[in-house]
Structure formats: structure tokens, C-alpha cells
Length: 165
Length: 230
Image (cartoon, rainbow over all chains, first blue to last red; front, side, top):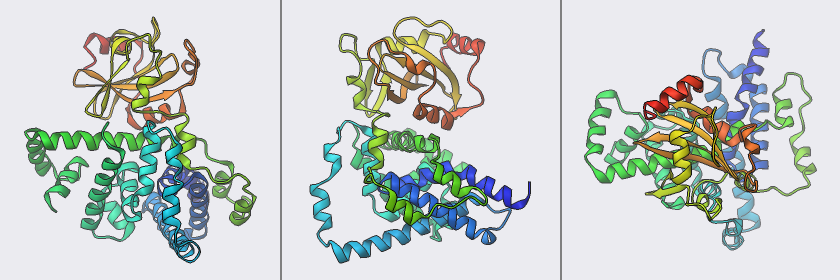
């Protein structure tokens, strides 16, 4: 197996996890798969920047997170330009209201969506993807104390939102 | 690190062993902290139950293609334009199959006693389900509940998958009781055991993320029962 096939093989093997992370970040399944595809394409184009011997998964997660931040910024600009009242409309038309409130699963996913971006990414990386604080601090380029405090705020808010039935 | 951050660092296994032991002892004697720890552990399980099925699901063809060397890369913008169906919130698709929580009580025919018991946000097996988990071997099915596989999880507890009319699930032995880790509505009418043939992907994923080693064979399953599932 040469270097390139092993790189692509490893990338393929990461797809399920990358997809899960994309779903935790994104608002819907289509956006999540678009994000996963962009991440794979970017990783293939930038493969020279990955240092063999370092973790490919952390490198790919970082690419995904940065692409996601870019699209969030772009859509925030678009929203501000086109639909300043969007926030109010969204509350009025929340599809969650139509869902059976008893579905814990939908509730926890919907609650994730409502977390601020900087808390959601930390919650997803540590509580779902299983990375350690230090790994996430390196991945996101943040002090470990910032990671820790965002995680506390995020998981506390989640627990309040999903309730304790 | 403030006290709150230290608590969560302890919960996440981020403290060094000496600090962790000291903090663990403190939590044990503090009912409020113990409750908080239990709530946050349950939250972690629920996050896994919600998102792990995505990692267990088949990868869409276009993503597989994108990762293949020399594959024709699908133009993302074109794919977006070609998408005729508006984006569906991700959870609606999954919510249709995986149901955890208070739905549990409503999925079971009302003539039988509730097979679950909810206490402080944790769901335990009760009645016939509890009895089956306690006594039944996969090789000797009887009654409405069928046992699938049994295994030991990362916490060292025995876990068992089961199928009952219209749902299947995973329960793990904790503190002498069967705690439900997941329950999937199979949508079948009474007596439908279609899930017995193959595990639901959501459950399979739960098993995958928690199992240590191999599922029990017949003799280990029986030995575990004879030792009270400890």
C-alpha cells in the first residue's frame, strides 16, 4: 500500500465519525453531508499539509470545524442582509413544536442546535466524539481553560433544555 | 479551574489519579454532587444515543466517492441545485426510528404492567421485561421478551439486548437493577419479532460503542446469570 492509498483509505475510514460530527454541528442532514463532502475534498487537496505520524482524525476535524465556521459566518452575513427579522420568524415557525414532545432524541438534537456555536463544537468534540480537553484545545487553538469553561456552559445549558424527566 | 470546572474535569476523567480519587470521595459524600454527576452521565448517554446512529449508518454514495482516489468528484453546488426535496431537519428522520425516554411507557400494550420504571431521569426495566433480563437465556426464549446478546461494557457491567412486541432495546446492570440504555420502536404489531433477525442499526451502534471484548457465548451467559449478573 503506497502513501496515497493509505491516506485515502484512512480518510474513508474516518467518514462515519466525521459525518457524526457534521450532524452535531449542522442544522440539517443535507448541510451535514455537504460539510462532510467539503471536508473530504479539502483534506484531499491539502494532504501535503498533513504530517504523517500526527493524528489524521484531529486534522480532519479541524478542517471540518473551520469550514463550518466559514459557512456560519457567510450565512450570518446573508441573514443580516436579507432577513433581519429571521430570529422572530424562526421561533414562530419552529418545526419542533409539531414534533411529539416526548421524543427525547429529537429534543436532544434540537437542543444541540440551540447552543451557541462555540459551546456546541466543544460539546460535540468532547461529549460525542470523545476527544480530551487538551486535544480539543490544540485542535481549536484555544487555551484549555476556555475549552473547559465553554464545555461547562454548554452541557449545563443542554441539561436545562432537555429537562430531567 | 473553579469548582464547577473541576467537577466536570473529574466527571470526564481529566484529573490526575490522586486529584480524581480525592474528588470522587467528595462527590460520594455529597448528595447534590452525586445527583449532578448522575444527571450529566445520563446526558452523555443520551447524546451518544442520539448521534451514534449517524456514525453507524451507511455512508451516502457521494461521500464515498469523494474519498475515493481519482473518483469523479461531485460538484457540490450542482448537487445542491439538484436537490429537489427541501432539507429535512436531521432529527426527524432519526426520531422516527429511535425513541428513548417517556415514549417507553406508551409503546407497550396497556393490558400488561408497564415494563419500565422511571426514577430521577433514569429508566429501569420492570415487570416482565425485568424478569426476562434477570432470568432468560438467549438460547431458551419464553414469553414476550426475547434476549439477543449479552456482553460486558466499558464500566464492567453486564448489558443485554432484548426484543419485545413493537420495540427492542439495550439494558445494562447497574446497582442491582437493569437500566435501559436505549429503546427502539420497531413499529410492529403485537408479536412481531422481526428485529430478532438483525439488530436495529441504532442499537447496534449503541452496542458497538459500549462493548468490551466479545459478546458472551452460551456458557458465559449462563455463568453471568448464575452470579447475579455481577
